[in-house]
Image 1 (cartoon, rainbow, N blue to C red):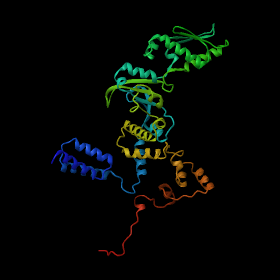
Image 2 (image 1 turned 90 degrees about the horizontal axis):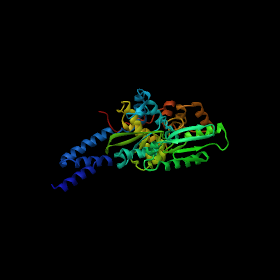
Image 3 (image 1 turned 90 degrees about the vertical axis):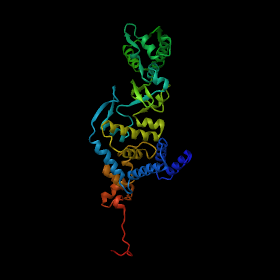
Image 4 (image 1 turned 180 degrees about the vertical axis):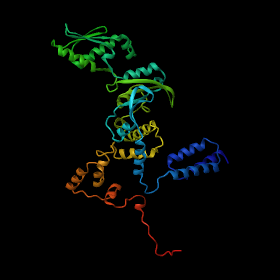
Amino acid sequence: MTEYDLHTDIEVIVEDSELPRRLKDEVYSTIEDRDVTVEEADEILQATESQYVDSRVDPLDPVGTVSAQSIGEPGTQMTMNTFHYAGVAEIDVTQGLPRLIELVDARKEPDTPMMTVHLEEEYAEDREKAHEVVWNIEATKILQLGDVSTNVADMVVQVALNEDTLRERWPTVEDPIAVAEEISETIESELGVETAQRGLAIQFGPEEPSYRDLLQLVEELREIVFKGIEEITRVVIRKEETEKGEEFVLYTEGSDFGTVLDIEGVDASRTTCNNIHEIYRNLGVEAAREAIIEETMNTLEEQGLDDVNIRHLMLVADIMTNEGTIESIGRHGISGSKDSVLARAAFEVTVSHLLDAAIHGEVDELEGVTENVIVGKPIKLGTGDVNLRMSANEQAD
């Protein structure tokens, strides 16, 4: 048999199977990489198909209850703590049970927002180029650029910029004086004052001599971000082994996902953040669903609970993103918006739900699990949704 015929026969065998497309492609590429006969390919396919059928959920299986139990039970063994992130001692990230609660509650802002920023090739390999990206991301305030002092006698604020710091944080600008001019213009526009600049020294004061106004200017000056992203207070750079080899990776304290993706040198296809709402706003609901799965799985794995099947987490992510937005699993989200009055009342604030339903004349169709348990009816799952009938025509042995 020619090589062409062999490949064609194997392709036909794979295509005739009942496997989903993704698995068909995976099986075909695996077989192609090995020198196998048609008979061996058939055996491999049958073994794969058998395992796939065994792994499927049985009809009428209560998948929601099983998922809740499979995630909830290991959740009782999780610690309630904040851990260092990925070995980066300088950055603390919420992990364990608080992080799991954060995710299923779909909190608008995580307790410890952070990003993992991957860089494009030339920036990922060169520390100097990587630092250029760091200074474009990390918020740079006046206290990091020099010394600030107040001259009460002349009622002025004096800023003495440090030349080495300016050269470090503006590596592409050759003359530090040009940076000082830029900072001086920023102070004028942000504080609404006139500045006097001489070299790397900047001086300004209130319009009317006032000690209170002078101190107010100093406080406002401390908050101005001259470079970088205001929400990102710190960036840690580390050399790590990734799928592309050894390269520099940035870890940020604070996050602004959309802005970071637009910065030159950032690899937008690999950069992630732990705020699922930011991912939803910038990349859409499918990306948010993936982020929920990934973040939940990482939280469990970090606690040594990686034996939880990912399909349980996928079910949670599916129900949270089913409507095209991110909904929490709670009374303000999925549980509180169920069609069944009794199901809503069984979760939280029972009296309020029953009163509202009575006022609006709501009808409960008793189609779900919770409401049927409450009224004592068999639930429509497992044996509860199967009717057995004996045929009168058949004689017993």
